[in-house]
Image 1 (cartoon, rainbow, N blue to C red):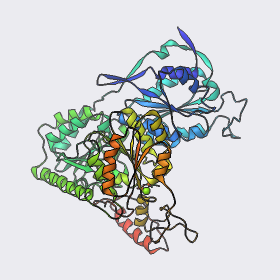
Image 2 (image 1 turned 60 degrees about the vertical axis):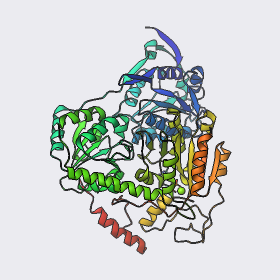
Image 3 (image 1 turned 30 degrees about the vertical axis):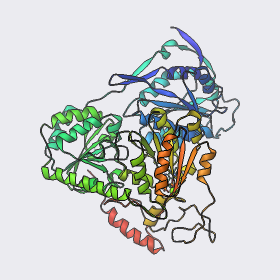
Length: 624
Ligand SMILES: Cc1ncc(C[n+]2csc(CCOP(=O)(O)OP(=O)(O)O)c2C)c(N)n1
Ligand SMILES: [Mg+2]
């Protein structure tokens, strides 16, 4: 057997650059390179190996959490067919990745994490940043990655990568199992040499399969559909990852079944398709939510049925409702006691289209759905056309980005009041346009994620929509976007704090307590009942400028439209800064989200909110 003597770190990099995936006959390298921040836990190992392999591009980041968000967004934009590796030092560098790693796993997005780890040989312990224990020498902070990784391993001997790396790749490229994969790399072992078999470095092509569902289950599903009077499709992220949007559209044309979309599934149908009901659930449209309430059959495609999608299990009120779930993951396919069709969305939908024959929904039902679509479009336009004074409304700003932005652009967002508003109002014109990280809704994903999107598809304009809270949490990777020449257009919506949680707080009777960025008064932070509050002397526009961005400050709607157009001509990351009204919100549309309210309180507002909560809570259902 031919071998080559390499350090464990060199062998990992050499292996990674030879991994490819193939789907539908199209082959591509699985890794777009490696993000990293060096410290003593990786500089002499993975760092040295990256230096020796310039064809496996190394990218700097400013924060380990951000770089993992970037890798996840890159993977999402690539429909999970490509990702990035992320290397960190030991200790805080490693644990900084945990938040975003959890986000990747929850969103079912592949990321490969290579945190440095404490010495395997132990004699010099405790090393800088080592977590010590009097009970065991066999753990480190990297054990915190275990519950959030779909595969986790610690490489205590250099030859262990011979069995670990293929497992890591199997999980990363599996549509059903994918998520964060963590290989914890002890600092000393990274630098240790071993005679690796050359076969390890052969080019490997991992086929991403289009698995077909069980034949008997498919037949039964077709019968259920043929018997359905009010069927509704819920399109989740799986539709987009599987590139099943065209097949879905044909299925809808054929059957007349309307479609509601989850946060990850929005864009599955173009917004102006007559049977596109838009967003479904807690942040859904009146069109999708009314049809969901009455539906006798839900066909869930690539959805995990989060509480936002199910309106905390209140969305489906027909006593006879049942579910068919098309999903690559058995786990999701069985949710809601469904008839599971475990398989790839595109392959399964194509077969289902055959199996249902000439079934079509009743004309009355189809007309009702189309009328609801039109009614909803009118409502969107109403909100786009609000010209709120003196501060503009968030809804009209979303309208402006949608109207003025390039139709081929991607819009990215993750947390705050924006996601709910966007889910309702954004008019998706292509399947990749609406990029929401809403599995984890992690403040800080926006700018870091925007960078990953732009790296995945540099030809497209990327609009990052970010609130002041998220911006303050994690915006430093503006620097990386400038350094690498990946232009982002960042729309920074300042409302002096948390518009979202402020509204939520008021709805649970707590008057916005703790959600405003203002000076304390009488030794406490003022809520929404306080008048004449003093805002803080923070200049976010200047902050963005200091990070290297081009900044355009706006006061009015017209300024904002002009700025969006000006930004198109600027070739560097541009931040459009605008203040907007904290209280002018987009309403809810016949839906609910379960946030339990205090059962006992001295506050009348809380008591009233609790009563309302109890009424809604009673509508929650089990599907057995
Ligand atoms: C990392 C993280 N911490 C806390 C939360 C809970 N949370 C959700 S929205 C929000 C406020 C976001 O503020 P901002 O970005 O200004 O958006 P706005 O609500 O004003 O629209 C918070 C704290 C979260 N989603 N992520
Ligand atoms: Mg805010």
